[in-house]
Length: 191
Image (cartoon, rainbow, N blue to C red; front, side, top):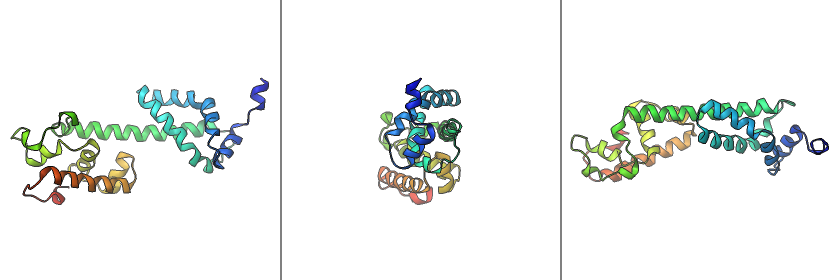
């Protein structure tokens, strides 16, 4: 009982985090980590993803602590951050599941990737090259080409920054161009 009284309150811990004392993050995690993890496990239905998201929540706390103003309401505030992280995770999962299921022949495991010329002849050159792209590149190209999303919409769908979406699109086009070699079509028109 005396030990609990000698520990700083949640508000003091948050104030210290806002001031840059990152060592206080451990105190916050010990106090609220299990509740956040339990919430994320129920929300996502995936214990492994919940553990990753729980870490993401607590890594976001130092920056968010500067905006914390609800004294006495730390647990709901943390669960709000967790809910946003879970929503973003679910959106990314939906995008991956929907698009990659819809375009199944474009999404084998990278370990199964063969050079574009070694894939079935009924697939076009672009489809055969597309198979060999890393998943993050396939995702942005599918969202842009197949779904017609803008860069900002792609960023929102994947939970990444608009700059990251632009970089991924650019790198995806470069990689596709490299895979296609001397193919006689304009990659920019496709992507």
